[in-house]
Image 1 (cartoon, rainbow, N blue to C red):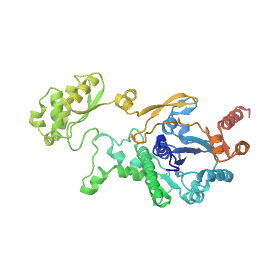
Image 2: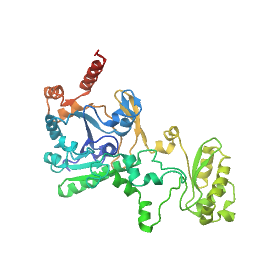
Image 3: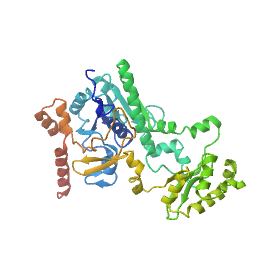
Image 4: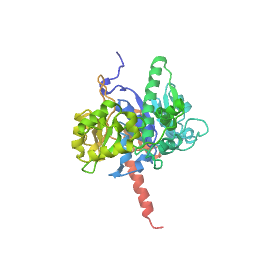
Length: 421
């Protein structure tokens, strides 16, 4: 078929996404679209995405940025200037999807609200991430993952029963929201394929986490029973928890059914299932402290890896509690290509997390390293039809910047700071 993209580059080959978001939820959603083959262009200010300035460094780059922004090209535009907004308008005409998380009034001042972008590309699919929603009583408030965990009660549900609220150890809400960003864009693309119309899409961290709590908040709505903080235990069956091993490590063991409890007993060489205190689920829940004590006493007789091997062989639901050093060597994670190498022009090999969807008809691969700030500015402007002298002019006026210009500006700031007062 004429004009059919080369889907060997991924199922979204031929689509262009403009990423004007920062930090995690928006950028990582755009990253997934890039992983699936879209041409994702990250448009940043001279300062760059906030994640370029946070966390541990590798060379001049920061870990959070490197981990979240593969599969993109990057350019710098100062959208606070009207002439740079004209450059953006030319870029927007080539795009299919725009992703942003900029709040008002900055969004409109930068020329990035839905109606402004739609004026450049009538069928654009415009996706914005907010903390709490596009309107309503919390409209316009700043917010991040941690705050949303508080509003939705997730903090109250996480942690030990006798302890205080605990947030998730990774930005779960941001990551869930990033998946909704990609999912929403794909759904809107389907609509556009049928009727030719783009649309505005709003996604919030608050809504993402409420959606994720169907089994807790949803259960309360359905039954009136208040969810409880259980730590590593289950509300519904036992044993279920984290158990120590002889070498100072831990394993997860959980038993959602009589079959699995019997398998634990056989694997550990016990007859707990014949003990009246543990003979069925209700009995085990009533005697959970004692059950956890005897299970832990037994698991301490094995080293972790040997215990996991023994339990897996007996068809027990179990897992090691891996340290990060273990995670990056896990054979199934490596087999699934969930850690993959990219070649960075300055840092060399940079390993990143892989693509969590496996397509068999149109395979995907991480093909681009996390771009440096302004790395592709000149190439992208040239693709838009700007001549080399025009590009030089845009950079000289401060409307755009490439890496050489950003380096010059950094050195000028350092010199200014070092100069005597």
